[in-house]
Length: 123
Image (cartoon, rainbow, N blue to C red; front, top):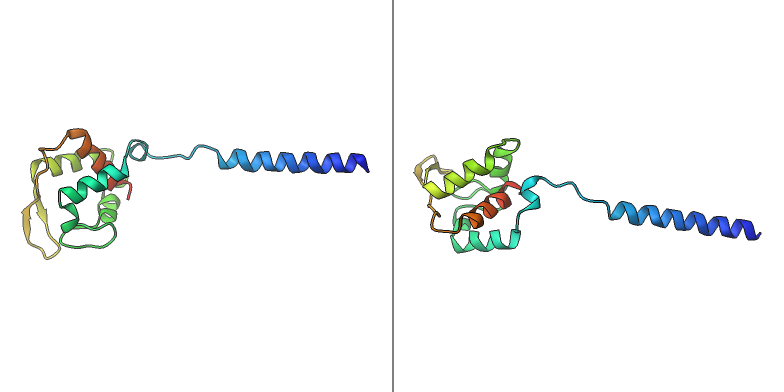
């Protein structure tokens, strides 16, 4: 009887150890997710009025951040291209078909802009 109890507790301990170990396993993240501060990015998006034309999930005047992330998915130059778009005021095509210059946010700290770009790309 004593042997069965020790075996059961040993099996229970091994199972708990396996569960805890797997729960603490590192999560695989993309490079953008590893260096993104979402709170700072959202604060910047609010401050620079990005959310006036963009939404997280639905199209407004401009595409949603989810749509932007999907468009650039798999593009190794995505971060650089979006950074350039935000800092140069490139022409943007609006949902109604008209074009206009995108607001330029070049007066911000470059690392803050990169953080917001990474945040958009992981949506």
